[in-house]
Image (tube, rainbow, N blue to C red):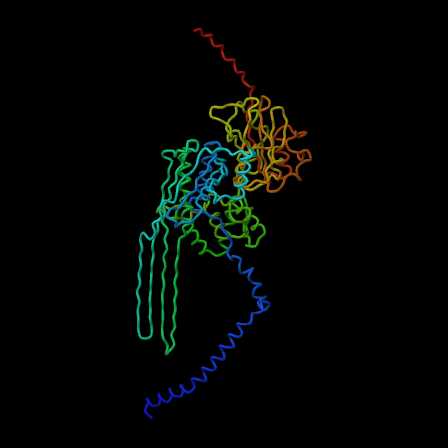
Length: 584
């Protein structure tokens, strides 16, 4: 039989079998549709549904949102502290995006930046008041009711921030490349694309009293974000069957992180110009380098877990979180996990107790510097183990040698452990230039800042030998303070500060603060456990308090610092001379 006849015969055979196959497919379809008509029993899916609560949880730990200028904000905090700026009330307008392409909470980023610049210096307090009805919430509604009933006072801010995301130029440059190859059995294609978008932010600082923008206090910056991708398409045929394969890798730089970088930079520029501080010193840090975190990420990925852990452990030891150890600590060591948790809490990170990349980056930021070629390179630490830099003060220090009041750094007396383990920065906040003493009756304001989260106790000794405990008290009962967070003594920003400090009698007064890792009260003598703001029996000098803490904790178990000032009698203001009578 000729081949064509054979093919025809086979076709006839399939044609004859066609109705039987069609009937079978109809029956199968009817069974499926009949099964779908009956509701499925949800009890049979119980085991499947029980996995939903676990599946719904993220598999990656959250991390703190930072930008290239996060360290610059902390640097500005120290500059403002050194400049002795008083606390300033500030607010902000909404920072809109007229392009409608970057829908981010820019105003909240401004608040965060101002807050990070005020942790140590108390430079700014943000006045939170919303007039947009669409954005008002329970707090704003209650505020309006209390204001109308004269049950609440709203302080007028001195400054305000204004601005907007001025433009978003998408796909300013765009590069595409596509190529392909086709054959009888195979099809191959390759594509590559990349483009760049520019986001601009303009911000200004204004005087709230006159609602005028201050000339020269402006900031106009832009940042470039991009995205790109590569893809390969492969298709082939084997007989009557076809196979398709597609693979690609893409990246997209989000607009949220870009806007945060612009906001941080603009806030630093505006505040630096307004406060007249050398803010440019904070913009030239290695951490501001665009490739800083990417380079650290490469080192993090290249190193083994054991190497990463030991590098971080060395950094923790250099900062006093870990005692120097000759043998490496395992990853699951309770000592290491506790040290990591304290380090993460003190540096504003999400506390995990493990060596993740944010912890690695924060611990090694002082391990990296710019080389002569302008690239990032390992430079090492100046010290790799904790060593006391000073010893405890001996004898009667401070009061006898002081004739006039001086700055807190000159009159400070350190007790117990010292850097790099922990430091206490005590500072008199109302000392003016050319001032030598406080007059009787004048109010005195101080601030205390601890480099690590600690339990803090502060005491006041006046010229008559009376010693009282200032902290903890009823307004601050726990005594626990966060790292690098200035504690006001007393809290002059609170309407109910709990106490005030007046210069009492002529002579020398002082305040001493002591920081420990745990509550000191159970270890201290009974006379020091009494209520706050009451005279302590048998204690008439701050040095005796230091001896009590040294006996309870040992020289290396606590950190102390004291500051002294002089009190002079109130000056008698001579009466104004009588004005001669004038006759017309």
